[in-house]
Length: 226
Image 1 (cartoon, rainbow, N blue to C red):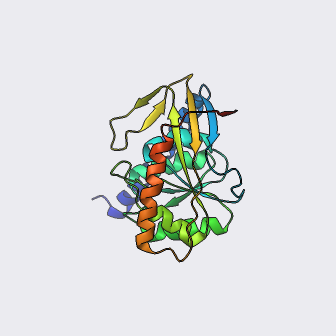
Image 2 (image 1 turned 60 degrees about the vertical axis):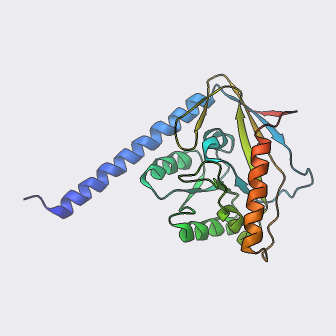
Image 3 (image 1 turned 90 degrees about the vertical axis):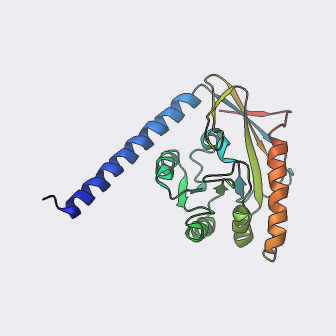
């Protein structure tokens, strides 16, 4: 008769190998694809905004090009505790991000504490306020709660590919096509005072969500980065 403990360990090892292989394959895909993609950056925010740390917020479906744009910058990003989040976490780690596990729907308290800890250690933060499972472009105010606790301004950011594929996933996940251009647009920083009420936080969430949608149609002068 098979020992259940041995079988359990074997299953864990198989999952670990699967996650490691998936993370390697994902990171190689990102590097190969974006070696042909040009990123152009536009800052629509206040030019006098502080140079310190921020909380970036973006829609989940635009995560791929933003992952590449902010690679190797040590940004701490909130990733779902679900098994599919493990694959993403492996890719993010290989791309120079710090991952914090949790979400606004599961593991939220642990995720919040992890982000606060990362901010105190000097990291920028990044959150997809409609993640991990939607509804798409529905701004959960948890991102702003993090900003309220840390004192960091919230900066909305969008990715606008000139040519792309869009998956039939809940978030309409966007993959830029090879040899295309992606415009990365940053919005106005939003300060969240520590005494902001939960009701005011929900109103601010609607405001930031509206700016994300507005930025998505932004056109104008850009700055090229390698």
